[in-house]
Image (cartoon, rainbow, N blue to C red):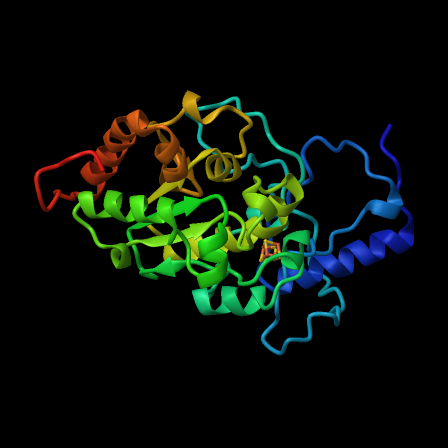
Length: 295
Ligand code: SF4
């Protein structure tokens, strides 16, 4: 049976929802898979990652409820994932930012300012530099990788190591230059020993990625590797099950392919990636500048 929440908690909840409504955030989703949450854990404040600043930066001051409905609308609406690979296994812990509409007036600069000198997850303690993202802020094509490596951590730029050089070759083979596209990662700090980012790190950092994608509004998103694909599609299925298929992320075309680092270890897979990129070229109307060759 559903647990009743106390009047005090109801009041706090109402005030907090009113606060978000004043910010223009109207859609809320209950955490999938958590049927009952003890009162002590029932929080609707933004997760540590999801910093929202009001214009006057007084985010700690909750406005009084405006006397209008503040309960979540469309609370049962499905997450915006592809119908093509349904049913997806949904990962735990959706972030608030993942569930809300695009933030009006958001810019890459604001996203970067909100990120600040981030210490929201444990990766901050071992990083040297936050690797925010790089490229054309109005790119039609966004590449999303997993996280920075040693070279990226040192330079503050994504994909500048060996895998990055291969990505650059791939981009140029598509008839583009690196600065025509935007390149970023799921997590913005290097995981120690280049391990995969852990679930809490991904869920903490990814709201900033979602905002970047919303701001850039690309025609096509290419996920490089399983971590990026699983994060954006919220699936636990292996990348090989949907690699090269057209999927969707927040209304945008998304295609997942192998990470360049994987290609360095498995060169024969380059031909598969090149086929995937040719699909992207067809959608974007790109012609290779020289005779098309697998990178
Ligand atoms: S990985 Fe993301 S959330 Fe974690 S400290 Fe770095 S910027 Fe912050």
